[in-house]
Image (cartoon, rainbow, N blue to C red; front, top):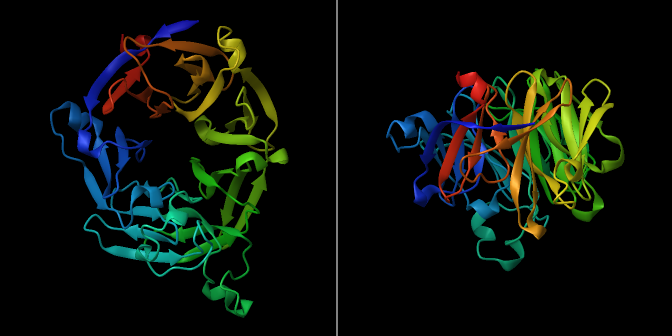
Length: 365
């Protein structure tokens, strides 16, 4: 079954601020754009009305390539930057609210500031961590390398890594930077991404270890205790939590050919969808990494086959029946769509600053 997507709005971001496009905080049509100088949040409805100014801008403490995945709080009052040597929370006026240092993602030394390695070739292609806010915005989860010892680890001797392993997963009070809980994820990341979950005290973490695998983790915080559930095999890339948090999606790490819907309670696979079966004309097609919730039972995901020059395709997936519906667009749409949860979703392209919001035709009637 194929459906023609209906346009809700189309806008163009200012060219000088165009960069990686990420979903903004929930319940508004927001996107975040990271440049070397700032992390800007745009309200798409305001852009459509002719107001090209960002809703809020956070000055960046270091260039974009020296960051992992940076995030903005749901209240738009705080941004958390995940740098090579530290995690820093910044207010819109540029003031530092708090900072937590950790070993450098590039060289594993401890630095006082980004100026120590600016222009150093060995730091140009670093590994990286990420951050993600809880649904209520009160806590931020961060994935770091060898964090400095916290107060509760003072008995760890002279080891600046405290009780953690090579890396650590921290839950931090967004207001003051207090570490509320921590655990060793047992990973050695080239990069990572946090996967939001609607449940209180729950967060996903998708870790890329290059050819060594792709650990997929779910963190459950209760007070100062952080329990980590890890999918078996380290061969599944965690994409998104399903509507209501009862399910989640993964794709195979090696070829990205199989998308699986899992039950959250025990990680059991409820069903799979093959990219090759959906696009038989492109037998080597794989699932893209962009995925998101469209409504209370529907997710959107994309496939592509760059080697064969096949245009990216988008698909709506019913997580209850596993019905898959193909989407068509009146214009070109890029890869990695993301859902807004209100029956709409966002795509980029075809121009470098173009952003579109779409809805199913029957919803508009």
